[in-house]
Image 1 (cartoon, protein in one colour):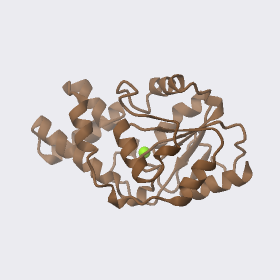
Image 2 (image 1 turned 90 degrees about the vertical axis):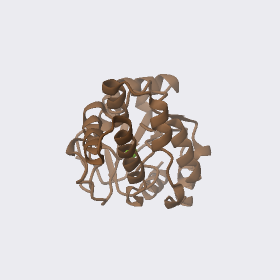
Image 3 (image 1 turned 180 degrees about the horizontal axis):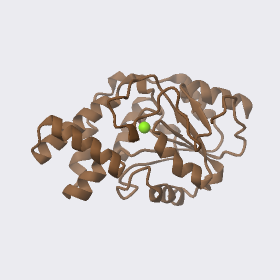
Length: 235
Ligand SMILES: [Mg+2]
């Protein structure tokens, strides 16, 4: 079970952050826009009513890691139009957190964004949050040859591309299953939780609730900003 005390992270030289519901709180309910746009796109693309499109979207998410991967594997879809459409969302509901910026800036070593979304999405969102310039690189689904987390291959590619020794790295994620590979590789893992009700999502892919927890999770927090603040004090 995860420890509650502040961990010793003096060995960490690479700080890797998921994007959605990690660099901003899930409580912002921002991601639901993308979720709905995916349903709309699948509905149009496959000529299904919204209910059937949504069921397929979630089925693919469970089975293939992302809905996009299922659409590519099963329906032979070209990813470009999909990624452009679903990431065309209203950013105004997300507010920059100046203290989060200060903390990420103060972390020693390199910082990265690793998202199952597109690199363009990472840039748009992280720029809106006034964080993007702090990162040494971002890795999106195109960078991963469209193989999503939680599959192991893209994590290996990520580390190869940025020359990262996993033992010197820490991984922040809101999706529990995406932390298993980083832990297997030797990274420190941190799960972001929220009080949002995700019971509408399939259990296998549901973001962690406040209870969180799994053997491959080293730490759990509800608040990335204050957690990093504590870590910085302990470094
Ligand atoms: Mg996420």
